[in-house]
Image (cartoon, rainbow, N blue to C red; front, side, top):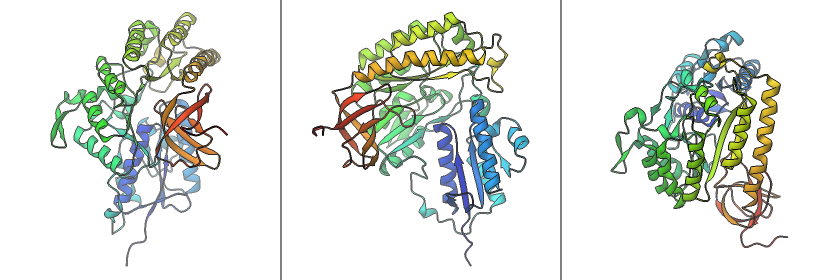
Length: 443
């Protein structure tokens, strides 16, 4: 008599890198014959993939674990919060098991212990691209795990370890499977994308019967051969980043760089253990834009870092005005448990941190508004994310999913999700664009 299907509920929190971990776990669950339950009450147990990067994420993760315990009672915890000592078990002692991030094998061991796998694994039901949590037309492609940097505000290396690059042939095969399954946009992610291959001394791998170095430039050049959008995230500003700008200028690679600059004050950057050369950064931005005028630059910054003076904050605002970045996120410094920066003198009061963050975003909003206004009247290519009765929602090459703006197409009801379209931009605001399918007249 066949074993009844075992059902596992799944809650995925955190960044795109954690999302990829969730996809790997879900793929393995399905490969072994487990079903994925959409509800707590229908699941035999629940896996919660947590985030533990900042205090708000810790609180959200602990709340999610508590909800899963209340609704189901049988919970396995994985992810970054699991690597932060005993906080999970101290808060929720009833959890069945706790693992750290990037731990598919450990999660599956816990699942096997508390919910033995079915007799018939049905491995033929698993598509080559695995189980994905993103829409069918885009996917995150994680090329490495861990990080070799020791930024004082960050605890990622203590949770995910040093850099470990995936073999380039393995990355390319995953990309090929995704494209074959209909993916139109590959979002390349890691903790430090431009460091890809450093740990293996850029050794040569093989793909398609030819040698390819384990290095960002060579990987990106190979990915562009698939003929889909390729978008780079988490790019640390090493010198060799300049090598991919010509690919953007040629239209082979999306003209989009996500570079976390974090600050502009040399002293604060040194305290953060980040590159401390704002003038050099501004020159590189000018050079990149000279090579590729349509380049979109996204970045993130931290204000209220311990010891940050008003003059240093003002220097950061001046940097913003000079850099004219397209997309920017800003965080008030959060004293994450275990971060070396917590020991620095000069902690900034919460109200000053929030006041600086608001001033920062007010300056950037004006910059973003002006830069988007330049696109009004142009015809651009977009990738359609949603279609409804009132039109369509899409993204341009300048817009990563979830974090950037949208292109709202009022007369786009005939467009199809996951397809590219040409759109004439009719208006803009600080974040989004509006437009109509090229060739149509406004009604």
